[in-house]
Image (cartoon, rainbow, N blue to C red):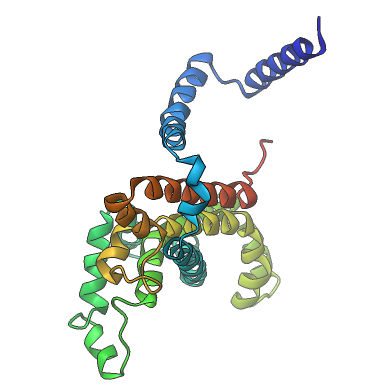
Length: 277
């Protein structure tokens, strides 16, 4: 037996042992493999269409670079906004009981199921020049719609539920016994939150922030509706891909691949699921 074949046999044995340890039936593994292919094959198909000879030139045009940098800046800002708003929301949902809580939770998670363009119309109806709050901002000399701020708000609107879900699930899984013990020992609510609750949710916080950043990076419909498409101001990478698709399909495919690579790198570098125990 050669070294290569021996290694292959070892890998097969290891995979089989892992499946046995996990107790996963083979048919579930087979269906899971089909599901993985369903996701991976379109990416492979897109990669096969990339014009590799001109790839660098296609993805380094001034408009592409501006769109990529704007996407990274706005996705970072919207993720920070999600952290600021999402952690308190998750703590309230996980650690309190009040009338109408299920309805409140449904509204918090609503952007997950809303068509993005509906989210954009909702934001425009609120922060636009003639919107619910837009007129007040207009008097103060602040214009939100069709600005970079609008991009950040649109991305945060669609990404916030991912952070809330992740942190809330972590809080529920950890239980409230540590906070209860701290409160029994005389710790004030603020002390309990900063010294006990927040450290407990760090894994969910990291996972939620990564998901929110990735979702914000790929946001398209709400951004186009609420912020428009002005190069260097509101035209993020997904919008640039959409426009390039009409005039230069090769550039659109190349930029789409860049967006996929950035998203995968972010997920792999920062998202580490907790190990089985």
